[in-house]
Length: 95
Image 1 (cartoon, helix red, strand yellow):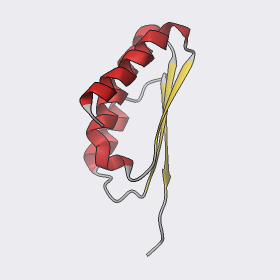
Image 2 (cartoon, rainbow, N blue to C red; image 1 turned 135 degrees about the vertical axis):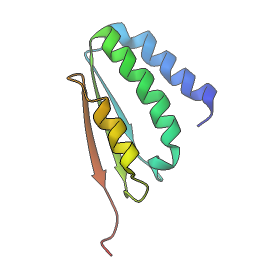
Image 3 (tube, rainbow, N blue to C red; image 1 turned 90 degrees about the horizontal axis):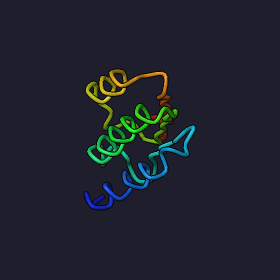
Image 4 (spheres, one colour; image 1 turned 180 degrees about the horizontal axis):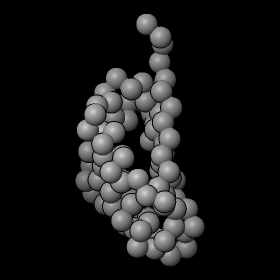
């Protein structure tokens, strides 16, 4: 996703932040972990907006898990907060 589109997404969230009780970011389609930098960029900025405006941020991802690494889980655990709920659905065929 181009950076200009990412910034547009963040600006939309920021404009709506005062109206929100909860925001859910759901990452799916293809393999979301191929766009991890996009997820980190939008996710980090969304998390900061949630803290600033006091709404709950939830997130989910559907992934085959092939690209999951320790650093990813550390990032998720480091940002856990009462305003952030995270869920994952692993998809694929058992080998």
